[in-house]
Amino acid sequence: MNYEEKLESMGYKLSAQANKRIFEDGVRIGNLIFISGNAAKVDGVLKYQGIVGDTVSMEEAQDAAKIAFVNCLATVRNMMGSLNSIKKIVNIKGYVASTPDFIEQPEVMNEVSAFALEVFGEVGRHSRVSLGASSLPGGTPVEVEIIVEVE
Image (cartoon, rainbow, N blue to C red; front, side, top):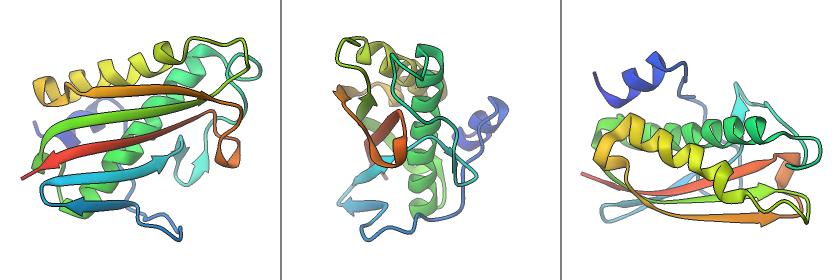
């Protein structure tokens, strides 16, 4: 089973549509691809909106983070033609829109780290950053960006 089939068997579909932004969805430099930040959009619609610790629960934030990660992977697939070209998930950055007293941003992103390992095995072992923010674009509770090494 390839990576995309594995994601689909877990209930995640990779979007084929490109984002309409004034910057690139991803930039390849040598064997590294830097993927721009993605929100938890499903079929182009934000699944969750709000602030973690206020209107968005931990479970919703974790789900949002996984969806945003999958959207990052969709960009890799759209650029490379297949997720099987991924040799390594190098880095994952997660931004969590949260209340000032919410300090569990790493717990939100732990869900993505575990998910990357579940899908990619050792290829999914990565470095990571988890940051809190007062708000994020469009009201998304979580934004994720990644760096991957490809063939």
